[in-house]
Length: 152
Length: 152
DNA sequence: GTGCGAATCTGCAAACCGTGCGAACTAGCC
DNA sequence: GGCTAGTTCGCACGGTTTGCAGATTCGCAC
Image (cartoon, rainbow over all chains, first blue to last red; front, top):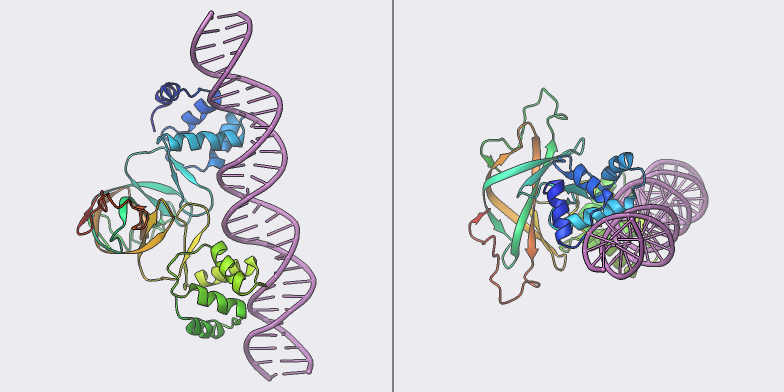
């Protein structure tokens, strides 16, 4: 997702208006790596701008997603999470604390059975496990997937 | 997920009772490749057994998931979908009709950045695109991912 | 600066998905 | 048949998200 001032220009260029509510959300989302839910954003936004409504937060998030500035993630656990990182990447979800990390995957190769006739436009990978904060210290990291050359 | 008669034995072996409602759901789920939602299952179940309640369907699905006979999938689009196929596999989601296909992935190799310190216990891959029914006939299949040797 | 029109915001209601709970029921065992 | 623990049912409720209508405000033209 672009910087708040770039987004402001982009919105204006599309005939969309810039409001204080939108600007606040641009700021809260920019460089936000926590993959917040709409509710979490509303909580922070409301603390800074008590008048803002939940409805506006949802609306703005929807707008940003449809403009391609934000992506929405359904990773289970109820609420949709939002990701301002629009570069091609994947995610790791901590089963314990729910943290979601950005994972960059390179040199992906595999054989697939069942994709015949399916016109795939992309793929999303979600790793499950425990994040560094939640993994017990006496256990080795990545018992299933080591971190140099991965294989499944 | 095992056959209805095997599940019946497994339930009894755990001290769980076998009810007509459960047997009906065992049957509806067995070999069901549509990845139905709880609501979809309720609709079919209710047609065959008008007295059955939504609550019972949810309860039975939860039980089967916790017994490992069923897996639940959050693939966006609201309701959780259920998959009686408990073999290790992945999914392809049709953006157009919402169909979910089972995909078997072999020889998966990749390099990942960001997984350092994350104790991954597994990974799920969801392919997006259009299923054979929804893809326009004049377009080549799998414009992004071809089907012999995949790369991203 | 003023006025106008369209976009936006707000707050409420409601839909959707799923769970908690208590009363009624029943499968399975004696 | 009778008992008991497990199950079902139906309702209420919580969390998430969307629809709607009226009030407000942005952005532009003058």
